[in-house]
Length: 308
Image (tube, rainbow, N blue to C red; front, side, top):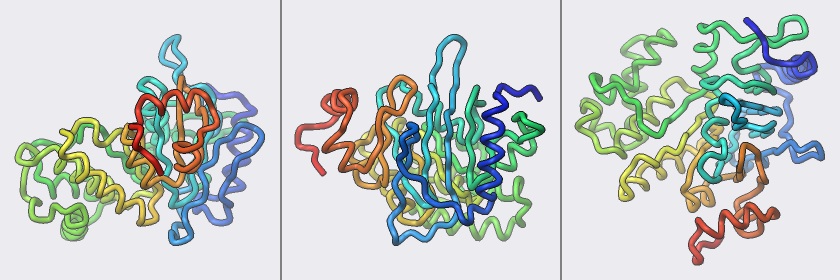
């Protein structure tokens, strides 16, 4: 397949893949450097995750003449929780979708545990993987969308177990046992036989979270998971994500819920106009942002009583 990458990018990607084998062992947590790379701070010591290192390097993406990602770099360590905030149209959701190759990048590259996402190195160039290989990679990357995307003709349990049976060839008995455990984890075991139309929006989103967990992914991506919910249903979904944040699974969350970002994030990333303006701990970003654009944004979206 035709590559859109320079030989220098391919060489850098190949070197990184060699230095960080796919099992993630021996890969230190990255930190802020003087080259503009934004790094999530290490996850708390209580977490014991050894997989799920995400490295985004100089990623660029355009839709027609509009450049929506302008050389974005971000690293999230295994078990880290990175929450991405910013105004609408800043590139947050597009960045999230490049991590599982739902959006192809126009430049730069992404690795998970040292393995390139969506591409392979051949010679000195990056080439897109075959579709079946991309789908295989996606089993390591769970994603929860704004609009649930449940199959309307399947029950809650059937929605959860469909992918493990089809993609991972698990037996129906094994998938059902695991599916019930996951529905219990999100507080919906008693609704296992309900169809989506019989569930509230919050319940449907919790089923979607259980479905994302069913493949035992290395990382979980959340694209504004509460934006389609009525206000009174938001907390039941956020509470589930809060529990996941304690589990050691790497989470990358796009959200407008600033209180949630403050409570669960290891690192808050503020994006605007296709770039990461700044990132840091919730204390750093909410209480003492360095950049004027960050201060201006938060002054408009955070209540005066909001504090750390």
